Length: 301
Ligand code: ATP
Image (cartoon, rainbow, N blue to C red; front, side, top):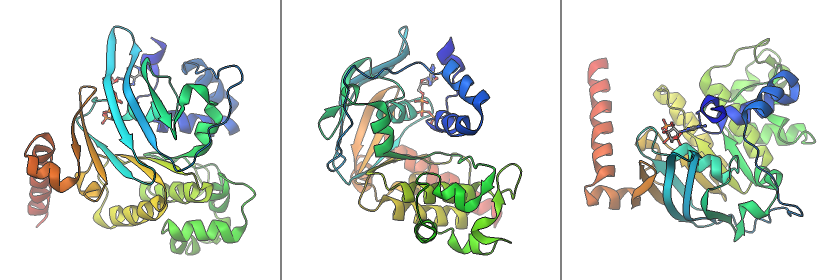
């Protein structure tokens, strides 16, 4: 039951709770109440990331034993690759993200990063190695500069600005009344979803993790915002292993590997062109999304 009440939305919910928890002990208490414990082994050591190769070896997982969720996932993500997970709602994409971040331990098989089983290393070191860009970045009630620097408080203003530039949010920040010292969040300036996400991306760029886990927003963004965010994410992904949970196929056509999930299994895998040529599930999803986009364009004209 406890697990059922946990918010389902990828890592965002837990990540957000942790972040807020630091400033709000009430939230922290809720998180501890809600989250199943992942215990570090006695004597667990820190994950040593060499290049960021991630392997799933016949991974099985359930939140409760009567309902298997992942049913034998085997996946090899080379260091520096960009991999997109796609598939219908409930197929297990977010669960894969949660396991990779070690919010939960697998119930069968193993996940390794650079050959190290996640169960043998400390959860904290896994969190340090993976930067998460959630669907909805939550801002602290503090300055926009603080919100970016949060991931690395000792960062200089120059480093914060460089991260903001890479995330394509610097010009916007400069246009605010007090620039980087402008108060944002619930009690300050309210940023749009797209602006908040780019602040989140800047935060992740500053953290400089070898692995990135992106949870693409499900809500429709206008074309310009989507372009800005894509540019910002492309910059953030440079030189890192990137796993994207994708909802819009248009954003992942260049991925090194597209993994199509269905009911807890991988049903297709490959690059965009190859999957289209295969004429299977992915090709169907692509045709459906293209038709929807044409329809939307048509109805706006
Ligand atoms: P979406 O695209 O809608 O985000 P998804 O492919 O990411 O879906 P998951 O969130 O991984 O799917 O969920 C896979 C299955 O696991 C779903 O049936 C969901 O109901 C179930 N599930 C997810 N989180 C929990 C949880 N904390 N407790 C119990 N069941 C869960």
